[in-house]
Image 1 (cartoon, rainbow, N blue to C red):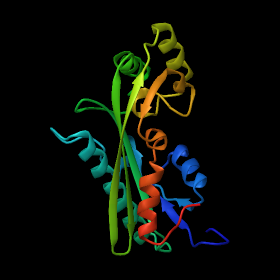
Image 2 (image 1 turned 90 degrees about the horizontal axis):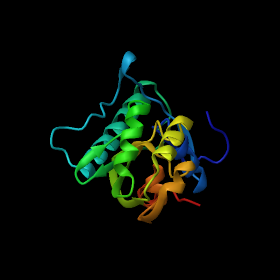
Image 3 (image 1 turned 90 degrees about the vertical axis):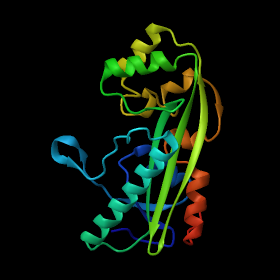
Image 4 (image 1 turned 45 degrees about the horizontal axis):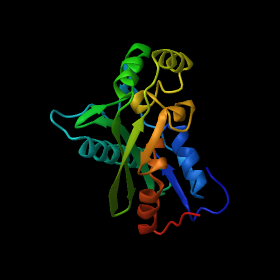
Length: 208
């Protein structure tokens, strides 16, 4: 259990190291509350898109489902009832949702498709605490330069974007592919800090 000042303390229902870094950036103390996400051992939240589901609705639904499941786990384990935050991020071309690559070949295909084009990054955050359950959505537009096939091959071999929606990491070497960003850098990274801080303020937690 944590020690010290717990006035800005929450549970983070995410395995993402990026989200942990972003919460630390705005001065929020947290504990990671993990749920199952290994298909071979079962999953607590099914992240498959529903038929015809639009990207914005999809990420909001999944973020809220992660928050609900995290809260259930907290109650089941009889943990202290800190506020809980969950998030979900996905890339889309038009209304087509592009998730994380299945393997290196799929990552190559995704980057080939995104090369030289614009796409949207949808990032949703949900906060669950007592009688408060709210979510926010951030939408950013990212333009990638034309990426040489040899660069794609090298980048995929490095593995920098294999566990990222869109097969690239804005905070890693994939940043060299981005020639324009309209929207939230932190949202593309995986946790929109403006929206997150606004939700946390509603339950009395102040960033910074």
